[in-house]
Image (cartoon, rainbow over all chains, first blue to last red):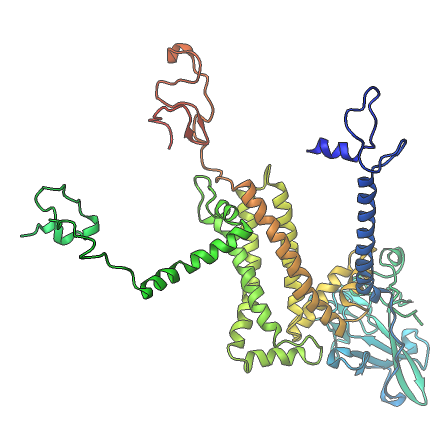
Length: 224
Length: 318
């Protein structure tokens, strides 16, 4: 069987001496490929093109969100006088409208403190997303720390990690003041020295070589 | 006076006495066909006979066109090795668990809404209002755990019985892919009720994916369809859970079963091979005869436990 198929796919060669069998239809002297072979290659090529025409858009459809960045949103969260330097105020704001509660974010907001070496008259909005695996942390007033209920991550007043499994300080949101009101904007991450970098997912280190091992995603906003 | 045995034993099972013997029924002399023609079957009786044969004829009609009976007979009546035991049912049990998941999943999909604002309330509706809804939801929920447990037990059986070895390595590989797909089902299905537990479990699960260097961040963006868990995440998980992965699982189960039937199953490792499997060269002095594996205990050469030389293998394992 296989030998027969090979014979069919081989170019026809006239025997040197006496022609014992008639040549296949369409044979001409010096042909390099049988008709059957041409049609095999052509139909496989067309089938491949048709398959690619279906699969490539589908894959693109599934992968496109990685490269898509949403619109920048700024949400009013209160008057400048609502926030103090020595404690946090919990605010809930909408990050993605129209999808119910999961489109909301929770931030702990305070005024910047010169005692901690921060620029004056700024507002610090710390995300409650734990830098370990994304559980919601809570600011515990008595301890002055952020504490995560899942795996025991602990952060100090500025959101720097002081215990547990988290790999970096808590994320922050950009803030600005418009007509006496504080607004929060896109999320960003910080290094252990609180230097702003593009937002990373929980569990990903920031700073140094980690910036290359956990590359910034195109779907995030540039840091302030 | 009839014999007691004739009263107890039903007529078809009795030994028919020879003609002329005592107890032989006295048959009447053959009647004239003209004066007493044999009874013809009524139309009603003929219809009844035809009705009884209808299912057979329907099957024959199908089989004539599909020619599937040979394959089905070969698959359903295939030989299994000696020592096959209850551990060998774990694969079928896993298949049954998958079928339960597929069937209950179809009915849950009739009531479920994969929207961030309605998913939780549609599940509450299934549980509280729909007739037997909580039961079907419960079967799907607990059946998922049952399936994962059965997959691992089945895998353990295959490993500890050495059933992954040549020529069944490919079936092991297919099984591992099926395990991964089952875990994908478990992961994507967990988010769908959209309560606090599913939400936070999915957050943690996606973030664990994100901790892989280089590709991790893109992988978690791919799973969420964006930088945050949102509406697209839920519909994406729903599509993966009920369209993409089930199709792949069904296709691979087909390949898995094909290989099981094609290659056959293995005997448990504690089953001793029938001896002698091939003609054992015995000492000429012991046997007194040289040559074709003759042994004084009568055990001749066998193939797979079946004597091939016509000896009555007394003393050889059955």
